[in-house]
Length: 282
Ligand code: GUN
Image (cartoon, rainbow, N blue to C red; front, side, top):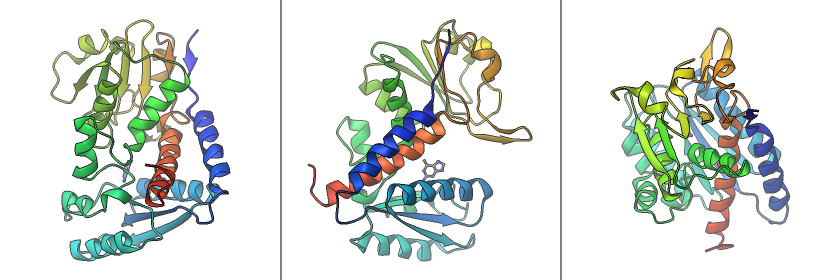
C-alpha cells in the first residue's frame, strides 16, 4: 500500500506549535517580504506567506515595489529593514526582474535576518557543514516531512533532479549531512531514466508537469514532488501522480505536499531568527 505523505497536516501541526509558542513572548516576531512587480504566481505565494504569518500572530510587512524599481532603491529598502530592530526576518521574493543583479540584492540582506539562507555567509556555512542561522525553507520542509514518516535517509541512494540555489543545491547538502548518497541531476544529465530508476528516493524539482513517469521510478521508491506548475488543469507537480503512486512506497501529492511544508518552515525560520536576535537561544 502506497503512503500519500500529507504535507498539509504535518505543516498545520507545526504552525499550531509555533502559534502556541508565540503567545508567550511580549514582542511579536516580524517577517518582512519584498515583492517586485505583480507576477501572478509570486503574488499568490507572498499572500499565502502573509496569511500564515498573520494567523500565527507574527507581524508581517509587505513592501511591494514596481517592476522597474532601480537596484539602488531596492538596496535602500533592504538596508532600512536590516537597521530596523523590530524586523527579524527578510525575504526577497524570487525571481527578480532580469535588470536587477540578484547576487547583489541577496548579499545585502543581514545574514542574521536571512530567512531563506540565500546569503553567501549562511549558504557557505551550510556547505561547510556548520550551522547557518537557519537552513533553506523548501529543503528543510522536505527533510522534516520524511522525518515525520520515519523514512531513514542514512545510506540511501537519493537523486535530486534540479540544481537550483533554492532547492537542489541546498537539499543535496542537507541530505549528505544525513549520510545519504546523493546524485544531483539536471538538464544536461545523460541517461536520466536509467539513473533515476536505480534510486531509493527520487526528488523532483524541475518545474515540468508530468515529467516523472513510472520509468523513472524503482518499485517501492520514495517519490517527493517539489514542482508547482500552473497548467490548464490547475496546479500540478512534476510527477505523473496517478501512475507513479502505484509503484512508490511513499509519495507526496501536489497540492498539499511540499508546498505547505515550505511555508511552515518559513514561519519556523522567522521564529528562530527572532529567538536568536533576542538571545533566547544560542
Ligand atoms: N521563489 C520561489 N521560491 C522561493 C523561496 O523559497 N524563497 C524566495 N525568497 N523566493 C522564492
